[in-house]
Length: 304
Figure (cartoon, rainbow, N blue to C red):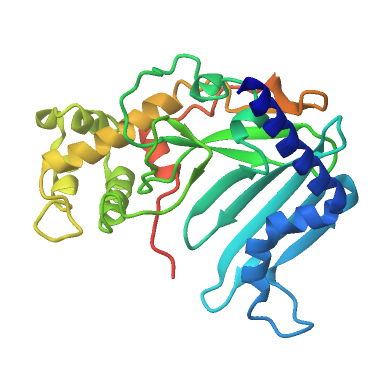
C-alpha cells in the first residue's frame, strides 16, 4: 500500500511539472488573474480601457497586476500574481485578490499555503505573547501581502479585520476574509455609532469603563453623549449592556493589537525546498490609545 501511495504521489507530481512546463509563465500568471480581469473587461467595448486601473504585465520577472473598477457601481478589484521558481523548473504562484464591493481580501496559491509559507506561521509569529488557546469563534486579524515585482523577498503585514466583518475561524489570524451577515446587517450601523461616540466623548477612560461594565464611573457629560445613542430604534443600542458587548469585542482586538511585536515580516524564498522562510522581522505596531484605535480602524459598510 505504501509503495502504491508513493507511485500515485509521484505520478501526480509529475503531472504538475508537465502541466507547468507546457504552459508559458505568462499564461500561468494570467490564469490566476482572470477572475478580476474578466470582471473589469466584460462590459467594455473593443479598444476601451479599464476604468481607473492598470495592467502591469512583467511576465519575464514573474509578476502580473490587474486592477480597476467595473460598471455599473464602479466596484473595484485587483489581482496581483507572483511566480517563485523552484529548483525543478516549476513555479509556486502566489496571488493576492481584493474586491471592493464584497470587502474580500484573499491570499491564494497553486499549492497548499501551509506547504508554501514557513512552518508554524501564525499569530505568535507577530504576537509571541498571544494566548493561542483563545476560545474565539471569529478571526481577529488578517495578513496583507506585498508581492514583489523584482526579486523574491515578500512582505507580510498583520492588520485587524475591518470591524463588522466576522470571519468564522478556529484561529485568530486568517489569510482571507469577506463580508457576511453572521451578526445581522444592522451590526455595521451600531459599530458606526461606537465610532461616533468615541469621537465625541471627553474622557478616554469612558471606553474602559463601558468595557468593564463600570457604568457608574462615566462622567455626566459622556453619559449624555452615550444615552443619545441608546433607544428603541434598530440603529441604536438597546441598553448599556448591549453597548458593553460590542465595546468589549473591540477591546479584545485592541488588547491583541497592543501586543504586536512584529507588525511586518519579510519572507525569503528557498528555491530548493520550494518554501518561504522568515528572513527578517519588523518592529512593533504603532502605539495607539483605545480611542485612536477605534477611530482609525476600518469599518465595514454596505457598498452598491
